[in-house]
Image (spheres, rainbow, N blue to C red):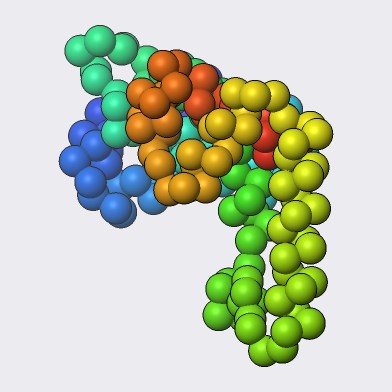
Length: 182
């Protein structure tokens, strides 16, 4: 199937410099290949169209990074980029790194703290105390430190510097915190 498909160097060059028409033509031409590749994978909470979109992003990355001087066969290069991008998306989904974003609601439609009545204040305080108690029971000392610094508005780099750990360790700790508290 894919061996019959070839993308001209002229079309690739135009797409590489940002010609949207050329990019769309390549994506349209390779859509059957994108469907075939994406059908081999599964992401929890995603459907076939989500995977196809990840494949399109991988193809877009291939178009932008392809160098004919280094890679003779664009199609082989594109397949590798597509597979790698889908695998990265799967790993991100498994980490639940973006779970908070996926479950979030618009602040205008769901105010976090409304001070309409004293009773609501008491309920909100009890909910906060419940979350803090859960954090106390379920999180390690490092995870608690990372959480409180993160809630204080610190960046990953600032937290890493303060705790004398790497930024990647901060990221990993936040992933574990999200999974333990969700």
